[in-house]
Length: 330
Image (cartoon, rainbow, N blue to C red; front, side, top):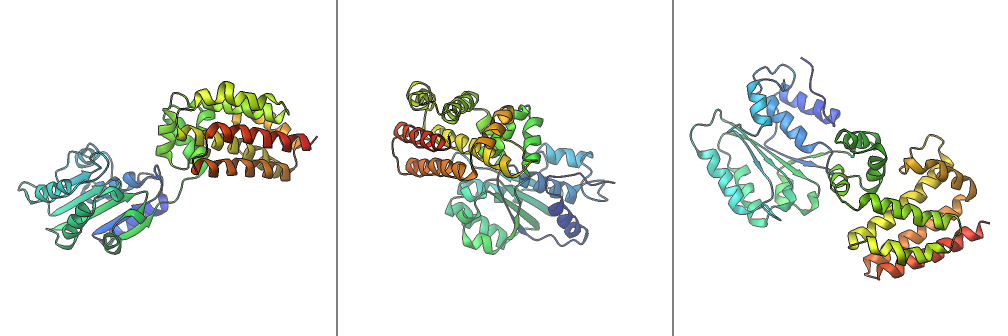
């Protein structure tokens, strides 16, 4: 029986060996960016432990595997934040659930999503749960920020890092969810977190932001002083909050990275795929040093945003500095 492919095949192979040798530890921390397959791996390991047909990992088809996938197995409990945090009442309810009669086996699995959001009380309650288990218990703590977890939890758990997926894989994941290739290519440059990319994709204004930043860049690349006016007439009316302001500067930075990277790599995959013909022309016009200076202007703008400088002033100043650099290239 072939093993189901996951996003992290090397980690899957590791756990397959542990499962075959019956050496699974009592607690694991799965750490990595959103979309790297942490929950998927925890579910696969869980299914493999209970699978009716288990020969080489979970079969994914038997009744037990399906019940786990559908969150209906009484010995598999999942916790996620209730609002902004995981509260002590949730952990206490978990412990009570496992003391009830009618469980199907001595083995029990706990999967905690966003484990860094446990309150100190909840984390300490879970710690007691780990130290005084009732039967065979394995806990999977999933997190994108292990530094926010209690040191006592960290010291009693085996840390498994889930590396960032290649850009091509992240683009494929987003297109599989119905996004256009052009939109997905930009999103994976905006964030390496696939879950965050999906959230950004749901923003109604995202496409308009991308188009507006492209027009702003076009004015600048053509040495058109309209770039300064455009900030007031179009750009500022579109940005609603600081998150949008960062997106604007990040998109400009990605455009400049497209130009710079295409100068040094003939096989470079553009973020702005629909505009790559124009960007290749710019790559032939601008020296790498000029592009580097332009990128530094944008990075300085991001630092100013961090310091709560007014966004319109930052964008207008960026326009003037970028235009000056482009004009020097003439």
